[in-house]
Image (cartoon, rainbow, N blue to C red; front, side):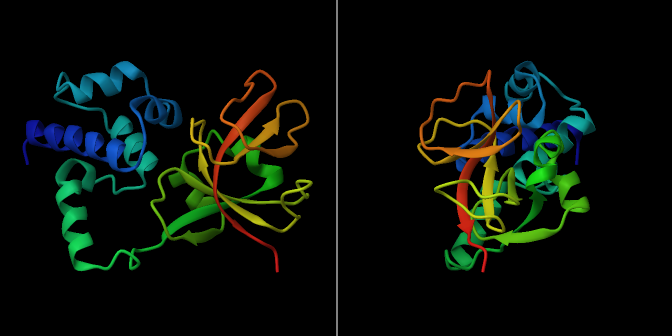
Amino acid sequence: MHKKEKTENLKNNIKYLIKSRGETQLSLCNSAGLTRTTIYNILEGRVVNVQQSTIRKISDFFGVSYKEIETVDFEEKEIIESDISLLGNMNPAAVPVIKETLLVRSLEKRIGELATIQPLTYYFGSACNVIGVLLENEIRGFYEAGDLLIVKKGLSSSAKEKLVYDKKTQQLFVIANAYVDCSVVGVVGDILEQRFNG
């Protein structure tokens, strides 16, 4: 496959994955550690030779194969797969489980890296940039020690409850509104699912 073909595939896949996963160019840049210019240039077809490290960051963010993102048409593949399988028959995604005490320093690491060094759980749903957080302390009024939260990493404007932490104490808590004061609070992400201890 020619470089131009690969770049075209990459561009189309990024556009499709952003749309189908409910992401934005900004959330992709912020979570994958890329500049807006890099993504803009790829999507506008201004780059013929995209750096391998950039492709890896994008594929890690979307939880897709590094090799396939340049060679497979994901939209076509997912349409075929959804025609074949019933909606409830989707493959579970492997999600790294991070203990509360390791969480803050793990937030900078990529999902692909975390999946190789942390235990895994499985999540049935579209799992792009998703981690499991194992609580070691209760979050008063919400969760107990031992509960596992499945969290979509990053700041979003959704109405879902968000797992956040105090930047000074690193203590976790939950907020239910979209506004977050990022000067005092660090955002882990939206809570997708709770699995209660016992």
